[in-house]
Image (cartoon, rainbow, N blue to C red; front, side):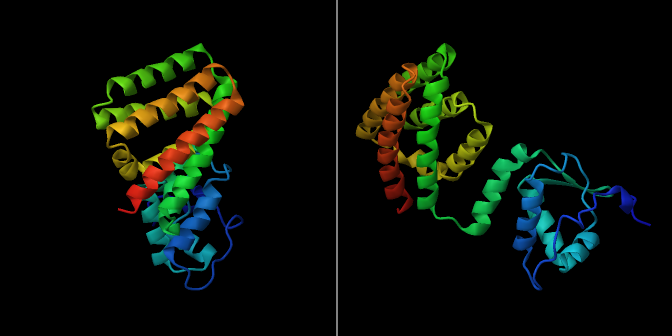
Length: 245
């Protein structure tokens, strides 16, 4: 007898179609991710047993088992021995992990991530300028002051730089963009940490961040987007050169 009644688990037979014969575990994971991120399944919902998923998708249980294990590793599923497999969070909660998984199995190029970050940061600057209040301007000013103070400490400088962009994205007040940028920045972190490594790069970064701040403080959306475009162009050149090392 199973450890839990199978009729208590979620029935996904109407939501999932069979996969092509011999489809690898990554395809099973992709199909499940599409289902989870629609927002139709509540956090904490128990999934059907492996054999039921395998039957619905018309694949071997090993492919389902590998897919579920991979989704557990990246934090999307919670496997509880003797109880079942559960969805960890809501669609928005799953976005960072989902994007990270999709990027890994899709083998995205670093250059594509850099381009994606550039476009998102420019949009964020525009939205932040439209929505910035005195509190946001104070926080941005504080992070810029930290950048100036830590200009000789490249690790501390990089941390202050990261906080500036985080405050900016939070000011834009779009949770999906915040989550997406968090993932992209995380994936590029190994290069970002190495990008600013000399006094000239530091001085340029400070000037460019100051221009973004001035535009945001003035609630000038066009100027903020333009200033961020200039900054991202410089940053992209540094990141691209270091990702090729």
